[in-house]
Image (tube, rainbow, N blue to C red; front, side, top):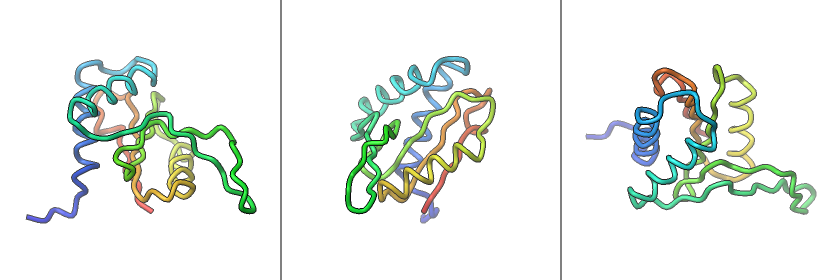
Length: 125
């Protein structure tokens, strides 16, 4: 039955929830990134972490220091946060990454929530 949902995004969310259930809130973003990457590897899902994202200006690639936390199967950007709450600036960051990378789907995951589902924002260009 077609649910209109993206299986890759659903799988990423499920693995992130598993990490959050095991660790809870309160750790550094890097700890959640390490654990989520472990889960992706265990699930045989291709990913890259801390992926550099250059800005192309007048046909010249400029290294402006942007890095995407995790890119899953070249199709999904996952940006991890450990903040009190997601803000418009976090959404703007992910939208910029989507535009610059050409990837259409992204997830903002805020691990600093009692329940991770309250800290998930899915974005599609």
